[in-house]
Image 1 (cartoon, helix red, strand yellow):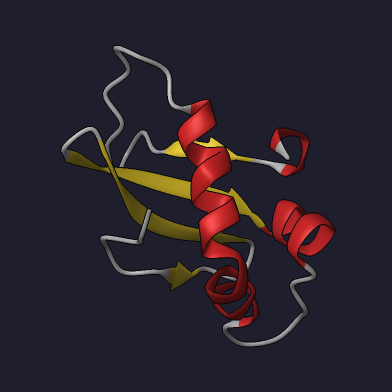
Image 2 (image 1 turned 90 degrees about the vertical axis):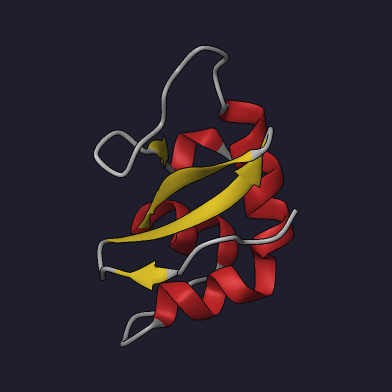
Length: 85
């Protein structure tokens, strides 16, 4: 899977979109998850840099967490925290 929308590093979390089932699912992943599981550092764009290195694994785990029948939107994204990995 590849990212289908802009990756934005918000400091405490990272947002991106991923293709799934013919649509784009908005995803939000916490800094804690990125630091603990993907060695994200501190600093500008640190989450985006870590994401770029491990996007395939992050997308695979996100896909595992998608619940059928849930409408994910920008206001209600799929949220991944450290315990999801």
